[in-house]
Length: 253
Image (cartoon, rainbow, N blue to C red; front, side, top):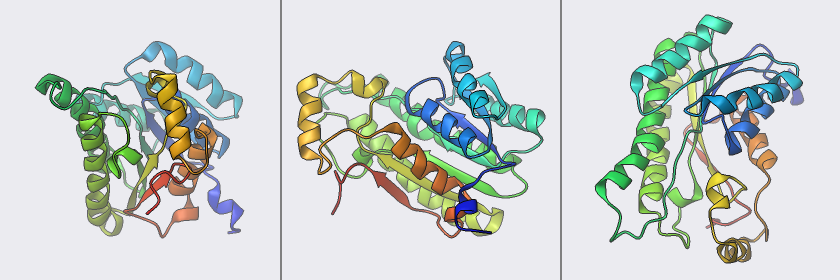
């Protein structure tokens, strides 16, 4: 196999959660461009047809299912739907996520739990469903955040906690499953990219973030998606248990 062919995903089936907007759309499009058929999951099912159109434009097939990752039975149903449609499943991108920006003294238990339920528990329920159903090995990529590595200017205790926990979960599942089930588990830690969450930030805060970032700009979703393709493909077949920051140098040691 040539080096460049290692990045191809021909014959693979990828499941993407949080596929209705933002980075989830970019991930689905990139997976299709690399040759994978794509299974789309999200709570906002009305938006999935638009994401699916991008998959089809890349010459691949898609299917979708409304999925709330906080409900383990819906996670099982999404994986079962993938296998019923395509016969197997090879890749899981745990992208579903929510965020808040509430000062720590004002955040309620309900607000905190709502973030943890999606960002950490939801990723675990999806990973469990994938690993139980998978028979031929594969790859899981958890979408963490630089906020799980290093605090920034925002008051995001719940979000940072959930993403730090997701990084720990990534390491543990990689330890359990890489050798025993041939499932590699890694994480991406995006910096600041255009998304629904970043769109809610004040403009002066966005400029401050750019100034703090050595690259001097926000990221392009395709830059993050390209790193995803590396992590789910045979190009990274000897890589597991790591978290890759894609952040313009924001959290470099």
